Image (cartoon, rainbow, N blue to C red; front, side):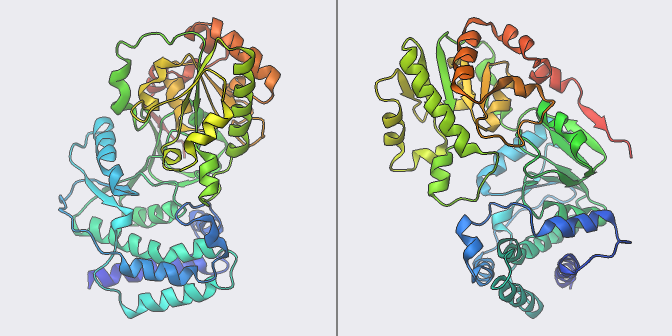
Length: 435
């Protein structure tokens, strides 16, 4: 009976979000949810799904075919939500290292399902699937079918095991605030853990008790968000930090005249039909690559190390893409075993359009520049990150030549980046939000 009750709750909640309009007397968080729920960006479906009139029926079929994965719950122990099973170990390590909790239950979104689906669920899925055939918001609508199942599975789990704390590693998902709203209604404390990158892309609206920030830039963004309904901000290191920190205990100084390009792999993402990430990454990566090509020909005494994104290595055109760009220059494509986050000290000056590696390099005190020929909302105007932005070749060349002569301290001091070092950032561990 409890399973049915929880499913009923999530279905009723979803129908409330789909109602037009939510009364102005309702909770403002609920009104914000309705405004954002069907419009926020999602990566759970490919770009072509926007044109697929049958996407609702396909989502319905997918969730019916998803088999529940058995778990061994630990009663009264906090729960952590991740996207895929390969994130479980990292999430456990990260939360355990930065909180009092050494034991954790980990739920994987892609493994959440039910053993049976009652008629009322099928009627809901049918209604949504039919609406997807005519509604331009079909991607976000279709995902409701799996989200309702995932919400129900999560609520079932926390209630059955008397769990009172919930850590969300998936706050970038468009339904994260809807899930948090339901959990908080059940008196579950919700802590969200965004990645170290800009919050603007996915997190201008936030419902949670606590939010973990892991870069100084995120603290610069937060005052611009008028719809954050939270109580505390926690300062934690970047989520991968514990896995590469040992590499920097006695790291040597980076060799002069070495450049590193850290790829987001946008060319291969577009080729594969992935959803647009935003921030003009593809255009800015191509600007950096062309600028590096020209710089290396003008300054053959410099070496470039390209650090590809893992997605690129799987593409058949990967090697040709870089060899054709940098033919005749002193360029090395880093082998797979040379992990970017473990090798910052091998590169004197890092360059990228967008990556969490930007904030990881800066946190550890390494010189870094950002390609911004294509203007976007990143970085915000008042951020010192603007002192790292390169948008034309002339500035690119002079900035690299100057940075090559500077020490790391001179580089950071000259550009106002003192607060970006990990030690400075972690000194303020908790920020209470005034209600």
